[in-house]
Length: 177
Image 1 (tube, helix red, strand yellow):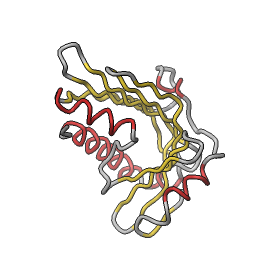
Image 2 (cartoon, helix red, strand yellow):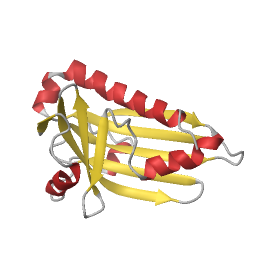
Image 3 (spheres, one colour):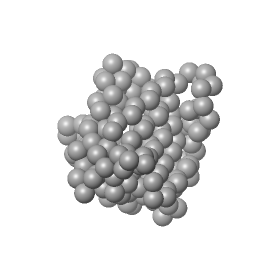
Image 4 (spheres, one colour):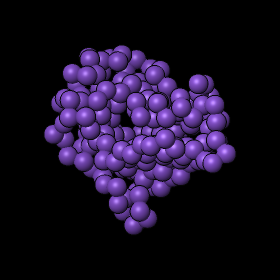
């Protein structure tokens, strides 16, 4: 795990360093095969008036509040460096986009963690607009703590993972046009 004071150096420049990092999970880990990963599933209603904004934010990889996490995409267009900040420090949490689909009524992105991420896992965000105009955002996750430091602080790391997910979902529910 790479640590930084504050937000650290340029995310865009740092993202390039992760392009060759191997994935530590795969999409099949979401399919129910017992791989030792914890599985979570969340569904939230998105107001119809906010569907377009939610779609933009999802496809721009802005899943979390900027005060918690910032992201930059490397030149390969699939490696994403997420930098998570807790108090005066931040750390890198690189992922790779392995699935991206978008049409007028649906947007889906699946990412897998890269070696160097504090967790090993896969996460899928899917936004669906229903016939009545309402929308639903689903988040499916399969994950485990991977970094020794994260495992050492397992109670906090597990709480922080749930906290980040709740903030992300709350952020999407509150989006406006």
